[in-house]
Image 1 (tube, rainbow, N blue to C red):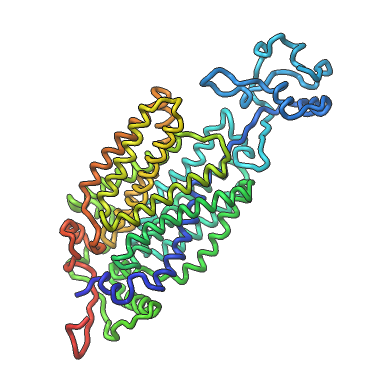
Image 2: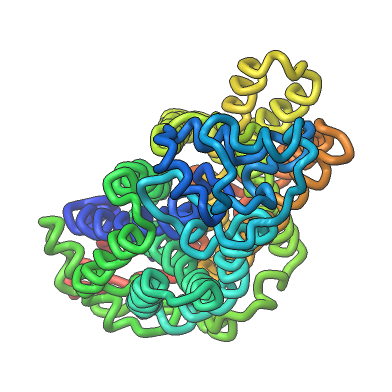
Length: 555
């Protein structure tokens, strides 16, 4: 009897209907970009110095330029390796006193400025920026600079905590219900973030948005891979992730046009409400309906796919069924991810791959550091780097499969980190080039591990498996900043050495996974056990029974 993939070959593996669904779901992927990396623009830190009463009046009276004002009234750089006093300290001087002159006003108070007492910024800061960010509005600098890290950590904590819950909802109540609910909640929380009255409210809304936004992205990924046939599954998976890169590119332009953080947050949140209207056109996954024994609805959707694709399915297609021995496995459970020894091995390896990909990806960016150039152009160029990785996958995955390119990419990323340990500091350009090669490798890993993850779990726990394994990615995102900056205090190359080890180990562990190229999506745990046979499973799978009165053996 034919499997779901066999039926899709008849009604269209990637016809007009699937293309429309794919474009709609790609909007989810693009909309996730501002949530994941929007902190770059929402919390950018401009040049700043302490505001001191009387300085502005003295500057106007003396006719100083901005450069002269900073030179006369702001402390200079501190010792190497310490914070710059001009950002966090001020001269403890009464700038309103009439004895201060216009030429080197501090000369009459001390022969050497270094002898003047310095104090903390008690009256706030002056920011050199035409726009605004949460940093400038809530003064998240100097002693409170850690609050910016906490702001980003909250969304990663939300990703981590929401993984299990949203994954279960998608497997228990359906992909479409999960998409509608998480999209609505995420959009509302995005708007609430834009109008948050204080920092605590900002953290709360950010955390809550993290709880649902990643689940929203992953549910869309799972749904599109279940709608298309075997021959197009890997293509739509990679292009779906490429839509995220498109979101990054668009975000840089939007942030440049809207430099105020509250307006920018509204600009990326309000359009998400329009996605709710599009989702009504998206049906439920036929695979999920079959796993829940809602066969009649699955038949209607398959007929709809055939009609939209210009195909004529058999009029005698009446029944979709499941084998009796699969009944007890249809309700998703966390323990199903570890039910058999082979499934346990796959789950643990995928968890590690997600963890290391996040650690190395973010770690390389943090270690190289900011270039000191234009924030918007730097972000734009770094986003463009991710496009070649997607094209490399598209042109190699059919020739070499999933596992070997995934393993090689891990090894390239690990080797790049290892090489960077021995590059002298004065060869910054070489270090940057090698880091870009490593980032290219780990970007390929990020995209491919998502595809392999979806192909290694059976339908009824596929979304749950994706959520549980990818939750380790969020954990990696939480701890990576601490690993980079704390280990660099011990030895500059220590973080890179750590990234090299975990990357090389990831490359080796990847080879323990089965190749999924040319293999139908597993429908049951037994199908997962038989994956290494590289043949389409014919037993204990969801199948379609076609009956005709004249030709009972025809399909």
